[in-house]
Image (cartoon, rainbow, N blue to C red):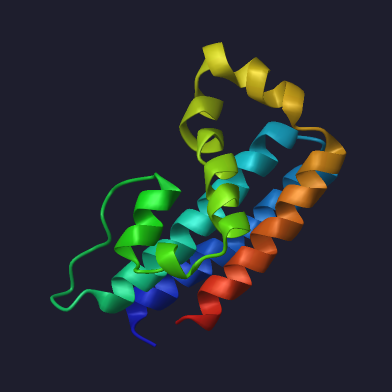
Length: 130
């Protein structure tokens, strides 16, 4: 595995573990954020694998666009595509106060546990395509 791909996968693995730590500490807003980061970095690993001239993956955070760049979007089930849509707002909007409380209200412990399970399943699926 090339170093660039390993770099992104190592970060994805670190981020899912961070999501679990945030769940255990009750920081539910950051569970969602870290789940987004996990999938973003896993998708960037696929993009990095396909880069022929050592370019870095694009500096975008939209998971659906990254999945298209990775040539995985059309291979995903509708459920997986919908999950990307669920995760997308947790990246940028969680950083801004006008959205933070609205997002946090929907992130209960139960919802966050489900996010982690779904993130782990999608992470596994992406890794299988590497």
